Image (cartoon, rainbow, N blue to C red; front, side, top):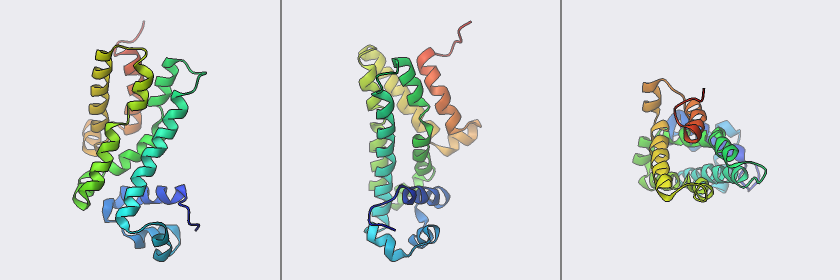
Length: 185
């Protein structure tokens, strides 16, 4: 394993986090990666650092992916919004973190706060594109709707209770934003 942190390490951490929350151990991670704990500690100072860097990885990945869509000059505004909401793979990693949000909050409130700070800015790039196209009031209403929707659909209890999936909800969110609830005849 090299000194730079491979994406696969982060994906392995996310899988472990999804299964066990912050109670996974560095032994678990070493076993999954077929390496030693010593090697893991050459990449991360401690377990908090490991989770902290994974949170950064997730949100940096989302930003990069969203930027590719929103800055693509060959796409119309409608296509950008549609693809932005179909950008599920990167958003799904946030769901893996939030699945054990209560445990993360108990494990380390500062890490939980970091996740929430990122969630508070998750729509910013989209709004930079939309602010040229819609009114300030519409932008505020849209931001409120999206913030609340995101927090709900990233809550596993809400997903289970309503018998929906995160992926299906994200796929439907774009058309609702673009076209509303009434289908064209």
